[in-house]
Amino acid sequence: MTVSDTKTAIPYYGGEKESLFFTEGVRAFLLFVGSLIAFLLFWEIGARADWFAKGMPTASETLSELWWWITNPFFNNGPNDLGIGWNLLISLRRVAIGYFLASIVAVPLGILMGISSIARKGFNPYVQLLKPISPLAWLPLGLYIFRDSEITGVFIIFISSIWPTLINTAFGVANVDKDYLDVAQTLGASRLRTIFKVIIPAALPNIVSGLRISMGIAWLVIVAAEMLLGTGLGYFIWNEWNNLYIPNILVAIFIIGLVGLILDSIFAAVERFVVFGRNS
Image (cartoon, rainbow, N blue to C red; front, side):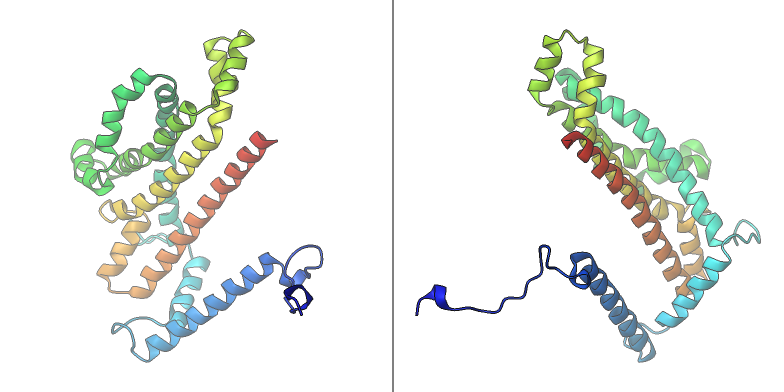
């Protein structure tokens, strides 16, 4: 008997015969739900059995606190006792302003660096010098210069989120297919028209990718910076730590992660749209 004569039953998981229940999306969802339930059970049992640090809240207690904050997000009992909805809006406002300012600087400057080798060599030392600096290292300087927590928060977002967009834009522009540029030159397109009609559309996937990374960094940084700024989700966490109430800290961490997931999903959808448009 040859190898080809043997028949082994191999489960079929693809193609048209794949049932709705066993699609990849359904299996991924079931894996997510199953792992989440297992994690919550482990957390609940571990907290009740004192497997973790003393005072660690149970999963049920944390979920109860989460539900309370979701159903009461916008109370205002003074600047140091705001609902988590107000703190979230404060953080989002700072991120939006700082991120917008960083984007309108990074994209044009990145295009210039991608087009001109002189600009790239002239500005690259600044990029390499400032890019590795921790965002929190700028915080004392910002507070000293601006003497205002709101402006300082925006400044921290600006100085932290500008680099991924700048670098990705310059890379995308510098690596535009030379054939596109040759065709534009052959058709007599001006330099400005070539930039707007050829270079920017060709580099758009890289630009959007940089914007996506910058948004992730901006949301990551603002929470840490706000612990010293007096308002926002970062300050909410710091205030709850001073009160030694861990459930509210976990609630804030969950909300921060959820908002970050939503923001990244929006940019991921834009990124897929841009890539699809270019491929089509």
